[in-house]
Image 1 (cartoon, helix red, strand yellow):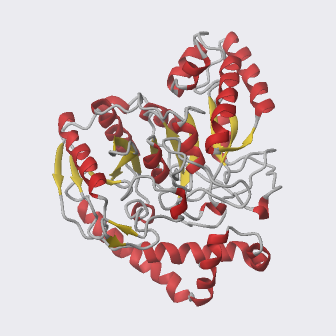
Image 2 (image 1 turned 90 degrees about the horizontal axis):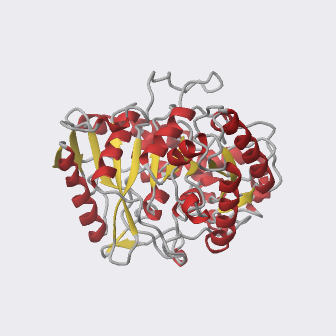
Image 3 (image 1 turned 90 degrees about the vertical axis):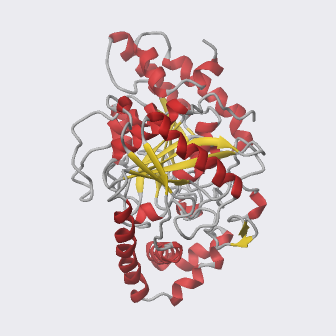
Length: 469
């Protein structure tokens, strides 16, 4: 089997082939390293490459496979976003303030992935502290979209999504506080799953996007995401928000389907402006669930627009996190941040508490949708990937002016509510740019979102779509 073929295999396929002795973990890691050397100079997705560490773990995996040791991801290469702790490997948060920070312990999910036999091949790029939905920082520079290297991959898990889309790895671990898994997955044409808040425990995360951020997988197949969830989900006493174990395997239940389930499709959530081509592609994709035996209805909904509240939280929390080093940080911060940091001086405790009040209003509105439907479908983003020189994104869509986050209005509401949500690749624009469909589930129904994603994958498979780079 060629190195090219190995790089495009799924994690499920690789784990089974390694267990059967059909694929060598050592050969696989060498193929991945060559792939990184080939692709990364074009897209800048991997910022810390762990060549020797990965080779060592691959040799260990190969010895275990020969002895018949069974581990669910034995020898499978993965990447970890560079704001997730990795023991003995620098974790920079994309910031010069943490350029030489080397954690003494792993994040909980990293512990679990290592125990499952996964081989960490490197750390992926993000915007500084993961604050914005593009991927650029003062330490490593910009990450580019594999479908068009003049365009953004989105963010903040932009390096993760670009790595998976370009064949660098079958699984990348990211996190999502306002859309940071789903947005880049949509723009890069891969699958991104944001678990319910608390489903994947976290520990020692930076105090930003408090009570909103979820760690989760970016993959090329839904089965790979289910495999990863079987490994990283489940309670841990270090995280008091972690949810109880579900008592079943996501992967084993993945094929049960969505026959008889009810889907609502909203093209705008009542406030968004959407590119007409994106809207049409996602509408057709939503209706395709009828082929799986589900009911689909386009609905008019009206939920509070939380854009201002998200900005308030991010500014207040990041300034608090930096603390008395704020002036020092300003000297080395990502230049775009300097324009909004002064807003911190205008915020009061009433503004911060006001976010919690409006969050309850949002939940009341969203809860009523799910009284009648099992799932809510929306576009993942309002536009396809935009040019890098557009900075934070377009200032107008379909001829109408929009705010700084106006191009990604669909994801962050469900960080505020904590619901599980995914982005599935659902088509391409005339310019051959990927479009994502967002699937939102009931509170704590992670399995349902994975099953719906798998049903869509069967109807409209996307794995054969690969960027040329």
